View 1 (cartoon, rainbow, N blue to C red):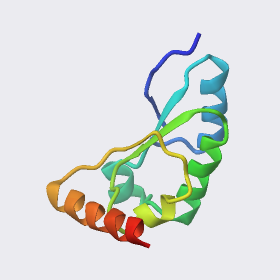
View 2: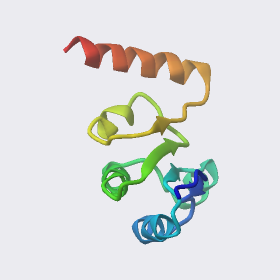
View 3: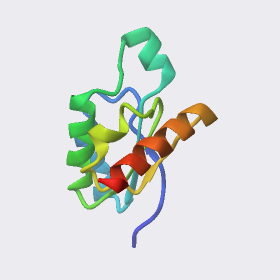
Length: 107
C-alpha cells in the first residue's frame, strides 16, 4: 500500500539516503525543500548539485516535489527531472516562471 505524505528534506546532510528510507516504508511523495533559514544562515541554495540530487531521487520511483526559493533561474536546471510538483511562492516569481516555461514550450 502506498501512502502519501510529504517528507521534508530540509537540513538533511544526505537527502538520498533519507529518500531511500522513505521508499522502504511505502511512502511515495517527497518534498525537496530549500528553506529560507538554510539559505540565510548556512548559504544553502539551489545549485547544480541540489538539482542533480533531485534528479537522482526521482529515479527511486518516488514522486518528487520541489519548493523554497524556486525562481526563473532554477527552473531550467530542473528541466529533465520528472517532477510531480513545483511549489512557487510570490506573484512576481510566478510571472517570471510562466514566462520561462512559455519560452521553453516555443522552442
